[in-house]
Length: 347
Image (cartoon, rainbow, N blue to C red; front, top):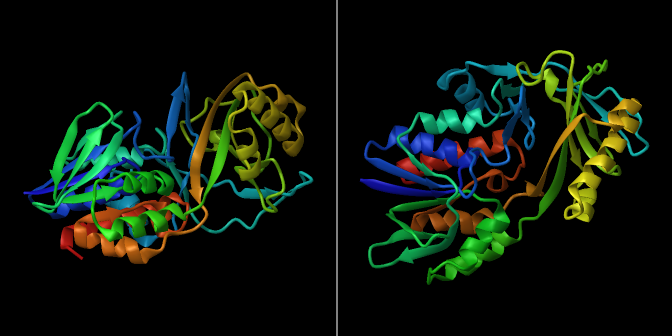
């Protein structure tokens, strides 16, 4: 029996669990997730007759293994592809047609969380939600790992441990880990050096349809308070006909400056910006709103792979988009597949 412990149930963790469970006959996989959901920032909410992806907006078709996973290996029922283009806008709010690449922009009728749900659903993994890991402990006597959660329960021992939280949270787990090895401090330094962008997101609902030729607008000069605006009604099954649901992501600078401000004021400010950018004053007055702050939304770059690779000798694997070096959902999935294979084949 190979006991595998995974901290975090993000996309990378789901992909790794899928590979390990399907490759190692005697694997016993346990996942501990602090929140009530799956798939990390590829998050979906539902409200009345709305479904919306309020973190990552879609899955790009930039990795062949991920494309095969989504379209062939997993059930593709309910898979939707956004065909409308992405336009750009500048600091002055001027909108221009973008250079939309010939690529897919995938979600599901039930939202992006379907990726992790379908991956975990194909395994026998035990997933404990609302379970916050507070202590990582190396048991040197038998070369295994144990985890203590916030409720005082111990999980393990595990032969292999995978850490999937964002780099700052992974660095904190390693910083406080009960693991007497010089590599721990080297890992803490390397992982802690990964910088992140914060994103404050507003979700805006309107009882009318927008007559625009694009799915989304992205700010290219990084000089506007808004970084991204997308239309969830472009995803089949997400928004009732004749309505508009906008997901508005503030820029990193604006998000940092207003992260702890009153949410209602933040939503109102972003709605005003949207009305000006799109050129429709009605958008300043949404009929319904939602919001979410993402403190660790996207990594600015990757981690020093030397210490990460060395940790595998102790049965410790780090995974996620920050390990891949690209803050994209497909990158997290690809990294998870890679880590799963390394665990399965001992490489």
